[in-house]
Structures are given as C-alpha cells and as structure tokens.
Image (cartoon, rainbow, N blue to C red; front, top):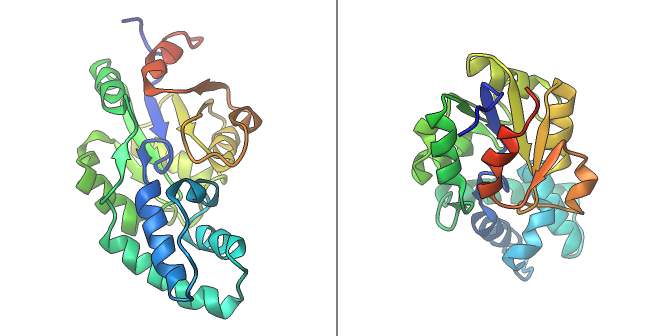
Length: 222
C-alpha cells in the first residue's frame, strides 16, 4: 500500500459514515403523526437532513402543509425523545466503510468525527453501532457551542485527535464549506443525504463508494 499523506481522516456522521435515514424518518414520522400528517418514505427524508434536528423537522413540516412556531416547539421534543430511544434500529455503516477504516488504521492514520448531531445522540449511536472505539476524537454539533460550516468544531476535532494534516469527508454543504473554512481539503460522498448534485458541493474530490477512499488518498499530493 502506498503511503497516505494525512495524519487524520475526519468524517461527518449522518449520510457519510452511517445511513441513519431509516431511524431519522421514523422519528420525523412519529412527531408529525401527532398532527395527523401522513408519513414520509425514507428516501424523502434525505434532503431534510444536514442542519440538525430542528431544521429537519421544519423541512418536513414545510413539505407536509406548513407550520407555526408553536407547532414546532411542541413537536421538536417529541421527535428528539423518540429518536433518543430508537437511535440504531435501522442505521448501518455504508458499504465498504469498515474495510476502509481497517486499512486506514493499519497505516497509522487516526480517524475522527465532526457532526452537527448533538452529543446526546452521537455518542450513544456510535456505541450501539459498535464504532465508538474507532475514533481518536468525536465532536458533536453542541460540543464547542457552534456547528459546521463554522470551522471551530473541525478545528476542535483535529486538536482532540492530536493534530496533524487532516482531510474531511462529508455529504452536505455544511461539511464541505466547514472543511474549506477550516483550511483543510475535503472529499464529498455521493451516496449521502444530498439535496442536489454532488458536484455542486465543490469538494476537492468525490467518492461513490468507500472502496474508492484509500486509492484517492494514496494519490493525494504530499
């Protein structure tokens, strides 16, 4: 294996490491059912995800008839409480992820996470999926008081992982813009929760499967 010119490979969580759409859809549908609204199919949830639970719920309510602030305030804790109790019923790593992580760690590369999901959900989810021991650092959307695309959480992820040259993978503009704002290169994953063409994210590279990750990293200029 050729050498990889990075000390840390950082990842977004939802739509990048894990396909969490089934559990997110279940939580959204549980919440909106309290207003008698019909459920969304899982794939319809994809463009709602990426800016936190409140925005996800707002987008779902917009798409199903609109809302006011009182309705949002009532439904959000319902959604969050349901999700907290059902984090990993359907959620799974994307194909090829585990093999890619094994190969990266075999070269001495550290793995890290920076997600806009709150720690309340992130840490238990990783534990339930069996991945929590894999990561040198995990930074959630509330860890440093601000979320991506602000660079602060990505900087915190890097510092907590021990520092060094870092590249970041994600599936939304928050991820790619966050990496850019933090001054590090990015890779967009085309299999995530995209709300438009993956090319529109303007990442430094794109992968369509985790089998492509190591070859892309090995070819990266030193």
